[in-house]
Length: 95
Length: 484
Image (cartoon, rainbow over all chains, first blue to last red; front, side, top):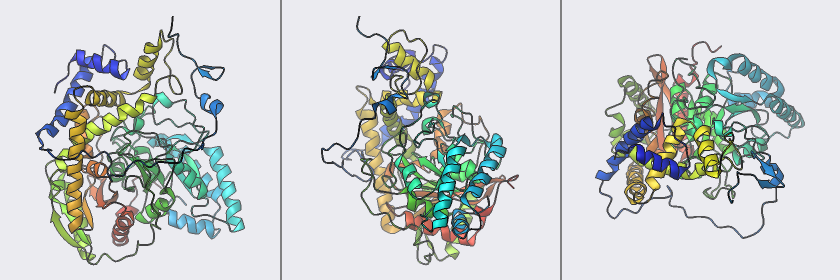
């Protein structure tokens, strides 16, 4: 399936990625090529085939609900672009 | 010292022929002097390496030396290293210093290994040529106008150029095996879940798997015994004992059944690559193996299924890079939405953005069944092909990549042409199986890789089959021109 500029704008919004005006046609072309490649799947008869989410069909392992991690807020926030009093700072959201 | 294998280095260190500090200084000096040609390292960790080497020397002197005590190793810059920048070759993580070690790194620390530095790669492991790295492409030591393969191109090139005796790597669709093939070294992608993914920056969680790149199968076996572990911190880690991967190396291949899939020798395979693989098949016949022609009928669907599943999982995994908690943040965001969009738009490279957008498309309302569900169904058909093959044969053999190393720029403008580079490696990831690449000849002066695929958890058998080949051939001992 081919995608056009408006499709890319919609996807970019969903993915929260800015796609520059200058590259949008090229991106649409590349993504259309990739979708043409994956569209080969549509020709395969998969009726009755269970989708495979895990290559070894393993199921999620559970653990006891106990505390295993200690608080390392300062170490983790050392990588943050902006913090204050242990909080992550972002531009104002609520007027 | 830089021509020795890991097995020889262990002997030399334990026999006090040289110290870990001498060995580590030697490799650091080589890397500083020669890597401007290859760009295989993003970061050299000289101070930490020497501290680790001196600690290893004390343990060697006291007779309390673990398996890899004092052996220098390079790590792909996808494994988190405490206090050492871990970039994933992305502008997004150019300033990211993890506060913890990946389990793989911890395993090497416990084994007494020394970290030389962090190797270059395709950005977020997305690429087959190393051209998507924020830090510039890696050059292939065999032909510096050609790509080293990817995504673990830095790991493969630094081992090929003898700037590290071995390196860690990761493989989501061929990222260990294809660069190993293009650089003439040995690379093993283990069974899914065998090596912990904790602290290994995620690309496609149902496919990603760490493994070693080395000069010999024996070295890969030594490294696998350290890398593999059950890890409660990785919910997909398999709870299963880790064998001694070196134990079966010397088993005879008499009576071994090798399956050769006809689909791996069709259109797109360069004739010189095909002939090198045919010659390897003859070698295996001489070693007593029985060669059987087999069919993996859904092979052609592996690349299409992968380019739904991998981008879908990548779009979910990479949503964590939002410019808020760590990583790149754009200048002067005007509101929160602008902060997200520009931080991600400016922080990610073109291929990463392309895959996030494809994944977003495949998972978006109205398309989920047609793309993601369909691809997961085809994935099962691919797995069934292998199940049927392994009912008849012990290992599957074919080429690793359709061509030897190609020039820079040859495929970088055409994503689909680049994706087809992984045509023989991707099915193994979809099926969760172990795969290994070893050098088996030359085409146009550049190495050709032979791929061996095993049933789940059959790494030891693959290493045995590869080791026996290396005992009777010398392709793995050839070094690139100009490597002293």
